[in-house]
Image 1 (cartoon, rainbow, N blue to C red):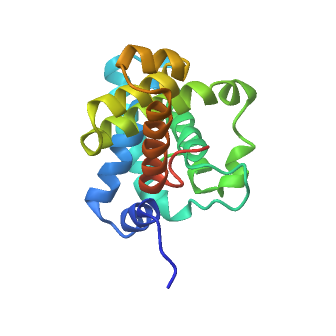
Image 2 (image 1 turned 45 degrees about the vertical axis):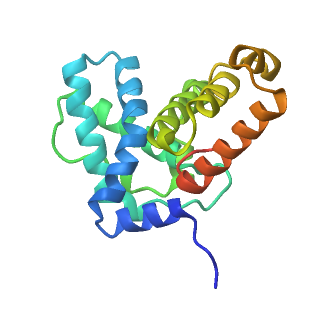
Length: 192
């Protein structure tokens, strides 16, 4: 019997209308959608409204998301939906989302311009920060600090180990354990 990852289950459950699974996706991506909206010049109030519209569109169109090509990503798909809803907001169109959300991911990837691709590193940091927060209770504070220092802040493992009074090997083990757990929990939702 083939073992399904937890995140596939999260995606499938969300596609089937499971509110808790969809909430997990919103918890993971809410900060990134907020970030994109604020970068586009929306006020905090408008950002909240557009963010809600984004997740209504995501929920409605979740069954359309597929990873057919290596470049396809859940983040890219949500990014295009967000850009579409931001554009709708600036045009004053608060009705139905544009038809971008119904396109397949490989078509959507072609709609994402170069400035979006330049922000991929920052996007990943935001996603990893939120993912670690969502899973923080599963790891010791020291392991989370080690992961945060090496992965999020980009501090060399040697310096992190000295700051936390742990061996360099322990820092690498903490990083590996947390990354493995995040990939299991959020496979397909966090891009590598």
